[in-house]
Image (cartoon, rainbow, N blue to C red; front, side, top):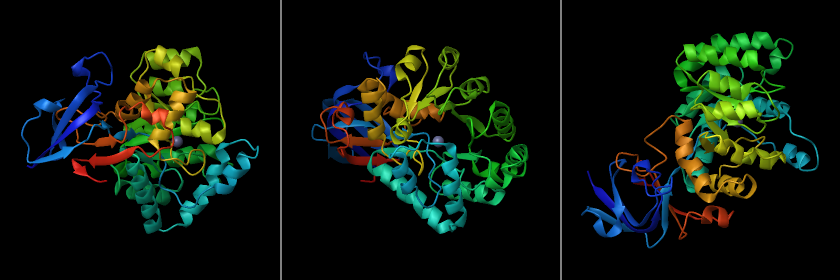
Length: 390
Ligand SMILES: [Zn+2]
């Protein structure tokens, strides 16, 4: 196994809690990282780095763990430029626009869909995302949902069955029938191709009882729950997520005190998706309230063609800092270690011996520049699974 030392890192963000050096980010100044195979072998002061086969001089730049984007919808065709344009001209967002993408996705061939997923993953990788979850949810038939998951699985291990995105148009007058499909034949066809099950628990999509039926059926098939919860208004999604032990409640834009308490007392991660509020001109989630309750917070893009067509974790960090009151340290932790927690992963989202060698070098003297210099392409090098990919 060839080893490589990356030396002269001005600030190494490790997210390593064992370092106990006063910040959750576990920053090591003037640091080096040694990698071998797909793993991190060593971290520490640059002057103490062990001998290695290869060397890379970081030249005083900052290194952070690769971003972990735990919420996206990449298996789709077409886009919704006109809808965005209309919305920015004053029309509000509703869940119904999803039907436009469902029609385009059903009409697309497998290779077109696969090429789209690859394109958006590559776009995210250029911006430092080394792990990206993605979902079905634009097929809404047994065959189209299973196809979406098979295609997603060619590109990422973190695949989520979201047959319960909206009620399929064919079932508009029979939502109970659609829930029966999602929890029956569609689940049977999809479960072998997914790790997670998700439901859009929202007015206009699925109510609390329907969401419970979907998540419970999925869990019985070995899929772990995650929930689209409390995005457009108050509702039962967050409480349901906590009650069912979901890995994550995603959006968390409209929370009651009881919702906040439930998150604070559980290990269900609150995943905040500020790209959605940005793209729909909606009110921001109250990150400070969620953090004060002791909840674990993740940041993610929600990359999808309707309500958040960004693949940029640095953009979401900038929004979280500027508009959600998160500190730059909190936002970076949530975009890396927080995302890993939302995917129940301990091998990613940190730079420590034994972790996967997913590393991002920023052309900046501090990670604070991710929010301080919004929109600037600061990612200068990326290692994924120990391989330099850009
Ligand atoms: Zn979503």
